[in-house]
Length: 200
Image (cartoon, rainbow, N blue to C red; front, side, top):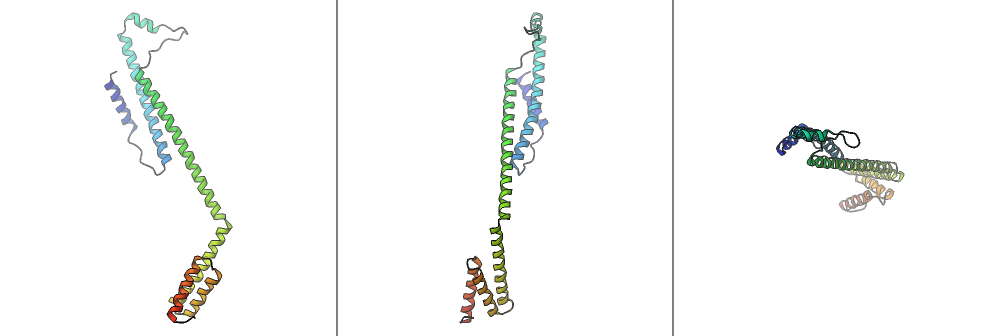
């Protein structure tokens, strides 16, 4: 079989493999899909190359003389009939494809294991944050300060009760002095005091 025939066989195998799969957001999944596709190509190519080798061997047998065929069909020292050797290019290509498939399999397995480890670590971090009593208490403190601050602003802007708003702002400062919302309450107190010209 000529090189053109082998090239046509490779093109046919590529056509049988179909178009590449759509890209996925998951990189490990994309690598696994690519490995499967290459495995299909390798199997198809291997089958085609085996057929080519068989055809080459058959053509060689017909072209040989009678004496050469007799020598080729004689059993070896172990008693097993000899087979025609594979073409060196076919052996090299099959070896290369096998090494490449193994490499892709190892890479995909490593990426899948790393992804699973990242997901486990993320879940553990989420549980630690969700179950941390200090974090829960801090969220409740922030929520309470925000509720009082919003109430003070509503008293001032919506109801026109600056004295009640000042009392609520002072309560935020007294109850939550280290909270960032206490600084907001201090600024509002200063604005109210400056706008009224005296301390309420």
